[in-house]
Image (tube, rainbow, N blue to C red; front, side, top):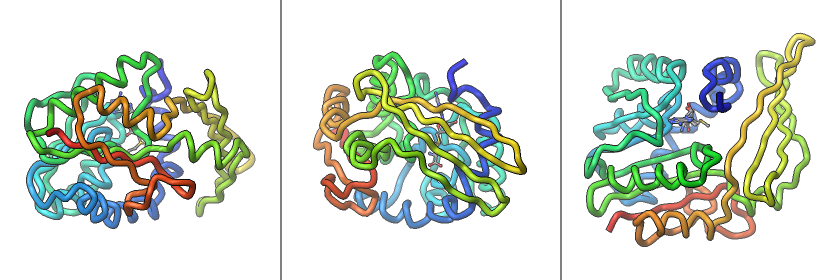
Length: 246
Ligand SMILES: C[S@@+](CC[C@H](N)C(=O)[O-])C[C@H]1O[C@@H](n2cnc3c(N)ncnc32)[C@H](O)[C@@H]1O
């Protein structure tokens, strides 16, 4: 089983991957995504929506929203969140390699490093082609992930974060395969016990991601260093691509 197919990982890490502050930050991120994309209404695809923090916010703002994820556990959290907000979202349990709905969406998002998970690069490209197919002509794709340049600057030091439940999360990154992949070990230490989890995904440079989007049919690919639209320069904290289906 690949790490991302393991629902035990998403369940056990849920409080640390999706703490309340991160969920609360989604509303501001949706405002910035809409500004970057220049989209004001229509149908939105949140691909790899997880617990639905962005999907629910898009729906609250009147968009027709489809959230796709392969984790049953996270889709249950997403449903609860939509119910609590009295928001209507279509939740789809599917794999991003498979989900495709031709010419349906005005905006597609893939957020918080939910791309580059497959060891076969052809599968990652297939995801980009599925998104391209699923957009209407003139539609926009916003992809937000950690970039290679950021990891080079940040270095490979472990990072520690303390949570309200007393847990300490230690994140230890490693680059693999000639800087093409990032392997991140997360260890949660709580009540004297520790458990470790492994994440692994491709690490793209800005140029590398731009080239892949172009090769899958996208036009006018712009890069930013965060969702606020800062330049993809030395201060970039994220690798954000905004790509159009011409
Ligand atoms: C880091 S989380 C981001 C969730 C969400 N985009 C957010 O910002 O809160 C990555 C998500 O990708 C989903 N995922 C992983 N592999 C997937 C796949 N093959 N197909 C669809 N979803 C997948 C996970 O279940 C998880 O919800």
